[in-house]
Length: 86
Image (cartoon, rainbow, N blue to C red; front, top):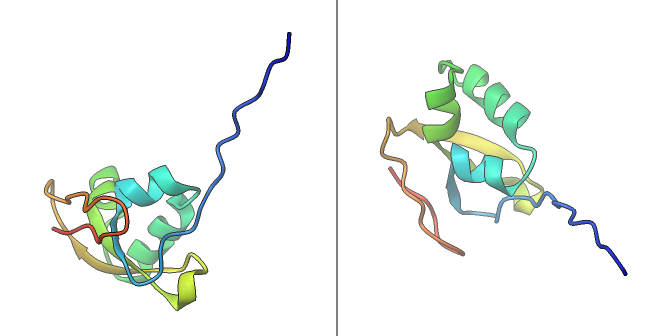
């Protein structure tokens, strides 16, 4: 009987799309990037800001993000190949 191990592979954000923090966390290991970008932008780093802020996927798809805005509780998932929005 063969067993397989499911491996969760992290993936970079898609260049030039906007992402809610919670979607970046679901894509891969973005916690530190989100936290650092919020700090750099003078934003709080609480759970609400980490999950419900909007970030732009910059720098040619290498996974770098920049803070756009805090959406409160209304950061909306745009779906595959579309930007999220507040």
